[in-house]
Length: 149
Image (cartoon, rainbow, N blue to C red):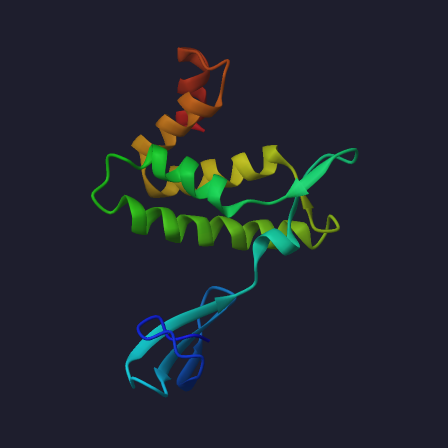
């Protein structure tokens, strides 16, 4: 790991822990040159694991697209960046579980469903915004059905 402060190529890990709910490792590192301390979080790259699409065409999963869609519907929140970060982690963990039974493939419909499920439990306003933006045939009756379900 390269030091983010002085760009020295050698750092040492002096504290490391597994996260409780996510598949990640938290590490405290110290630069051997400037001796400054920083934290890293190590996790699997979802783009190398998850594939999105149908049987005919698949593409690599993009966390950036997920983050942008969540940030855009959480723009009314003061903590929208942090909220989007943790929501993405939660959604990806659910996608990993689904991918184990489908040869690492997930559909856009599954991703949208997981996003809606997470947003409904987290923030009703963001949930409604997501429905409005990503459901092209949404009318008042359908929206009421989604909200009461």
